[in-house]
Length: 498
Image 1 (cartoon, rainbow, N blue to C red):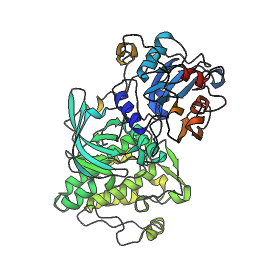
Image 2: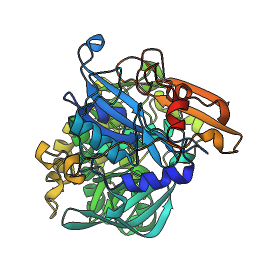
Image 3: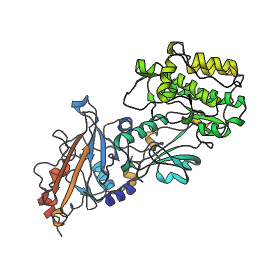
Image 4: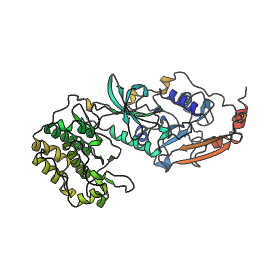
């Protein structure tokens, strides 16, 4: 196996290839690979102290999987050379070029593994070279948050960049980050923070978003709230309502609506932080996960589900925060006291400066105890302008709806244009037993999207006994890397001596 240094070098080289997708989630892979022979290269979830594992993912027709399947083959990397089956190459690009031109299957015992079309990156898959960071804004859940700029075609936008070291994250944390990014790239609304993309081709992982110049809404309110006119606060809650109504229209439950999870920039409240958000109109409560009790609708512990109406209740608590300059809800109570009081019908009083009609609407309609009596966010968007007398103005920047989210087939750069000349195999690496290093750890993690859970084989063997079978074994039914039985690695390696 290559060293971490070798892997990093390969990673940097691959970052410039349009068919290299870095850390690509399974859900996105299924959307990109749609026709027989479609393929791309990515890397597996990183592990501390281990080199990056690069993987070829290819769409094949498999009669055992209803005619479709995506298979995954781990590249073996030894002494700067690469192989999937018998043949070795100087680079991954050479290997792909050879198999694409010759139509020779990448797995000798799987004739349907013929490479036909390399699938290029989507517009949301950003390059690290697109991003410029200027200063640290603070710490996020998984790492630093920086201010900077991102190139979007011919435009350059100010951006907030969340950084995360992949090797320091658990698989569950990586999944959470990419889930949030997958949700956000669907959103295009002036009152929902704009998503610019993910740079996941190399370290560090970057999640790139719109920069709100005033930061988190709760912090802005604590600093500026006492000096804001009541009309400005009416406007803020109506902007938040418009953003949340938009999300509900996409059947997305936010599950963590609060002033701390909204941003404020260019005079607009923008809903943000989608780490707990889920697709669908209902989501089951996980009793083992922390929940924001002070914003929780009273029926959630009883029903065990989050719905659009639970978001509505949390929105009502956020309105209270806006009118009270970012103060913590139920500030005089312990967390354990809040839910029982709310379930008994207690609602927080408002300042006298808040109009009575607004207070009654939020208390009795938005924060109604029974979800059946609670209004929808569409109702809120329609009702509040009549109650407050404030009409929202349309943002000047109207390109929220012009960001593309997919490439046409013509825009994908084929490998033959990258490597116009034919590539050929090279002699395999010199036998590793000639090197005095004592032991290596061989860990392979090859996922089969259509055939069940991940198969992991971990072996620790001396270099003298490290056979080709140990390097390529995945499972009894997977020929991802297994060579024909007649092939003997010792004979091949001996023949490569100078």
